[in-house]
Length: 252
Ligand code: 13P
View: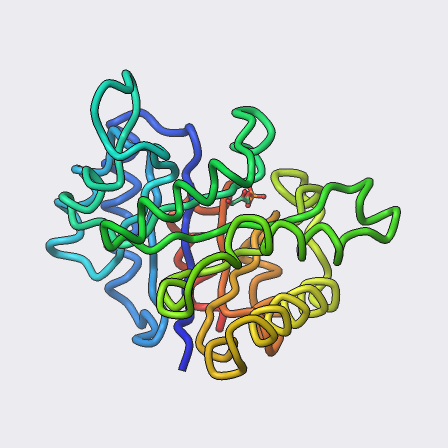
């Protein structure tokens, strides 16, 4: 059975004090009727990862980073390596987010290097794909998603790919309040699963968690998560409010 995952991507938000408070509130929220079969993942900025790992000693959530260097280590000022993340016992790292592709020019080649680094050090990539609005309007969304997967991920072996979590994040839905409809999400998630099945076999496709991201909130999560091929969410804005984030996780 594939995992149900709700991951919060804090992006470049929160002071240290606010991060501390938010983690505390999330912990409190998890004390009451939290579903046993939902994996909660928090992806704070690097500088708060240690704070999050301290909380995770007491509270059952997993922790992810938002980025990793494509290099192994050494003279790369300002970078954080996969080995460093692994040495902090992190479970996940987001790779291929549209904001990194857009603002930091991350190419498919760089993304592949990042995925390889993470796999080498035992950190699971949460790999994001998603089309721009103009791609969808031109009817090219299937093609774009397919090439994003093929270019950066489908060179992996089956055993490597088994460690990947996928996230579909239509760029037009990120931070805009325009969520993909449950039908639009299901259509793409089923398409992604069919591509995984064609490349790695049906068993692997059934085991791969595919998360939806893009203006997912406490109101629309239930309908999105009810779709057959939607296995959870990658949450931005709504992950910064403990009540909303917990209520999204309880939406299965
Ligand atoms: P929003 O939930 O704020 O739209 O962000 C989604 C996202 O980019 C998560 O990675």
